[in-house]
Length: 102
Image (cartoon, one colour):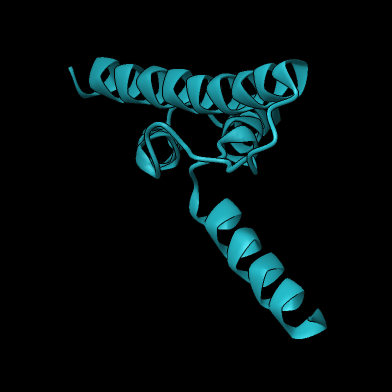
């Protein structure tokens, strides 16, 4: 039973990560096509949920699925999640660097 819940959690997290990436990239493409004069802001639809679900699913399946491909899939999902903590940290560092240049 725990195995199925772990796989469901991992799959749900991967889906949320993919949707976060697709919605953000899609919004940017539409914004560029419209050529609107307003400034574009990257806003994640569901922040941190995808990374957390993938991480918990990956952690709970480590004893059962010990393969590099599974690890690579989890890392890819987390890296593409634009609502994850790594993207928040990157955005804060970028904003700070941009503010100090002015």
